[in-house]
Image 1 (tube, rainbow, N blue to C red):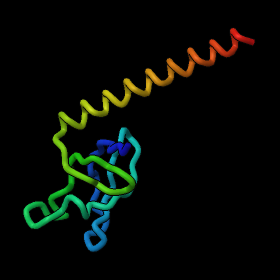
Image 2 (image 1 turned 30 degrees about the horizontal axis):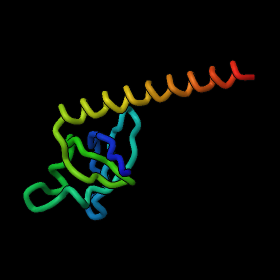
Image 3 (image 1 turned 90 degrees about the horizontal axis):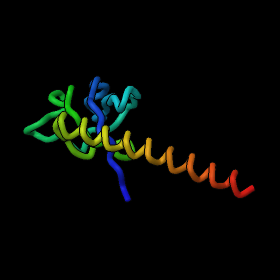
Image 4 (image 1 turned 180 degrees about the horizontal axis):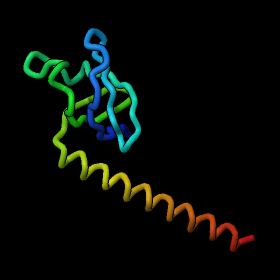
Length: 96
């Protein structure tokens, strides 16, 4: 399964290489925008866009509300995963 993580484009780094910096939950990294730019939405228009990021590429543009909702769901899943791990660790200790 592939997972795209929402992020916001905060800096346009290199138009020739289609590289920009995206912020994903406070973590910034450089990604490639080649999949989301075209004549109707050129590289220069991408600053501030919310995108789904997968393996270093912006795969699609999304609206801010959708991005925030997805980030909330991912945070909830992370919390649930931590709770399940803690329960499993507690069960293992009880069995010892």
